[in-house]
Length: 166
Image (cartoon, rainbow, N blue to C red):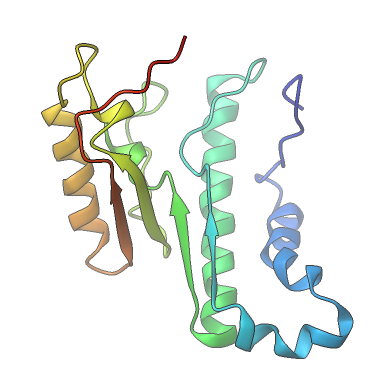
């Protein structure tokens, strides 16, 4: 637990296995036979390296690696079920810039696709509102590398643009 919200311990194989069929188990018993025809994959948000208060850097890395293992299992499940696809949001962000906790973290060793939202804004920008060309290039390079075997969706915010958070 992070102090505010519970965090699934995805380093535990049983927790990963439970999550694989979580969506299927949400269907009513009468419609479970329709699940393969109705759901052809999943989109998971927040799959970058998360940080939580009161959790060490080593533990954060372990949770991240557990999430990757789980997503590989989910992709295998949907691949066998109906050829479906799994996408993660945050899958490219780990490349750009490298994580200050562990610069080797990335999603290229997984079997899932990626969705990158807000490219061209927020974390793709410098403090003065200009684009951070190095960060944008790293995201594009990650997308190119990952797209050789996986679906990659880029959702740009045409900018530069900032949202004033006060």
